[in-house]
Image 1 (cartoon, rainbow, N blue to C red):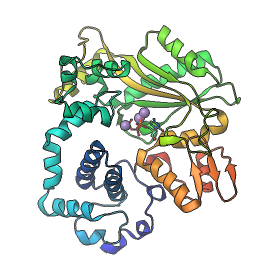
Image 2: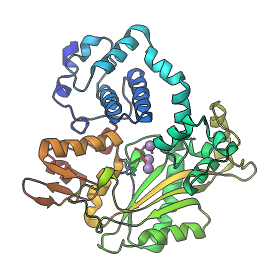
Image 3: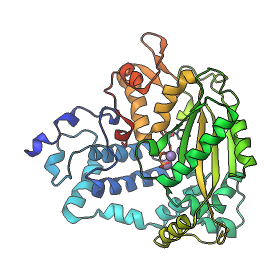
Image 4: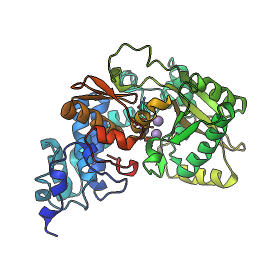
Length: 385
Ligand code: CTP
Ligand code: MN
Ligand code: MN
Ligand code: MN
C-alpha cells in the first residue's frame, strides 16, 4: 500500500484508549529511546515532558509497520517538536545523541539504580543523588536511615530487579489462589497488570480479588496475609485498609490517582526448582551492572524474592477495579483524560461519575465501561500503550 494508507485510522485518535496497542510492535528502535527521555523527565519531576514523550512513543507502538521516513509521520497525533527531532536523528544516524548522552549520564544511571530500590521514589532518590550517593550499596555503606520497605528493597535488590517470568507468575497464581480459597471459599481471583496484557515478563505480579456476595470481601486481606505468613511465603508485606467509604474526595477521583481498595504490597519467597535456579544464574550473568552484596546470597537454599500486589474490591466495583489495574499506566491515564475532557465524566478504579447526568454509572464488565465511555472495546492484550 501507499504510505498514506498506513495510518488513516490513527490520525483522529489522539487518545491511547482509542487505539489498539499490541505488546509486540515494529518501532522499538524509536520507542525505547523516547522512553529513556520520558524516564529522565520523570527523574527531574517534569511530568508534562515525560507524558509528552510517552504519548509519542505510544503512537508509534500502534503503527502497523516500522517507520522509515519522516513524511510517514506528518498526520500522526501526539508527536511534538522534541520527539520529532529525536526520531529524525535516529532515522538518519541510527541513534540520538541526546538519548545516548542521557543513558550515559551519571545522574540518569544513579537515579535508575536508586529508584530501582523497592520503596524509593524520585524525591528520595534525587536527595540521595545530591548527597553523592549513586547505588544501593552506597546506602548500606553510608548507613542511610531506611524505611522498612526500603530495607526490604535493598536486601532483595537483585531478585527484585530480575524480571518475573510468566512461569513464575503462574506458580504465584496457584499459591494466591490456594490462600484466598482457604480463607474465603467462592472468592474470585484474577491476574491483572502486565501479565493480563500478555507480557512475557514483569516487575511484579498483580492480583485482584473479589467475592460475588457483596460485603463478604471485607477485611479479607489480613486473613490472606496471615495464611501466607503461616506458610512462610512472605518476606515482606504492607497491608492498607480500604478507605474509599471514609474518603471525602468527591466523585470517583481520589487524590493522585491512588485508589483506596484494601491492598497489600508484598514480597513473596518463591521456592525454586533446580532448573529454575540454573536459569536464574544464567540470566543474571548477562546483567553486568548488578550490585552484588546488597542481598544475602542464598546459595544452597533455592528461593527468590518476587514482588506481588494484591488488591481486594467489592463485587459492585470489580469491573472498575479490573479496568484500573490492568494498565498500562499510560492507557489508564488516557482513559481518565478521555473521560474528563471528552465525556464530562470522572473515572476511577471504583466508579464512573457522569457530571452532566449527575449520577454514577454502574457496570458489570469492562465492555460495559468502554460503552459508557463511548469507546470501542479494547481487549487487555491491546492496552499496551
Ligand atoms: N496501579 C494503581 N495504583 C498503584 C499502582 C499501580 O492503580 N499504586 C495500577 C497501574 O495503573 C497499572 C496496574 O496497577 O494499571 C499495574 O501496575 P504495575 O504493576 O506497576 O505495572 P504493570 O503494567 O503490571 O507492569 P510491570 O510488568 O512493570 O509490573
Ligand atoms: Mn505489574
Ligand atoms: Mn512497573
Ligand atoms: Mn503492581
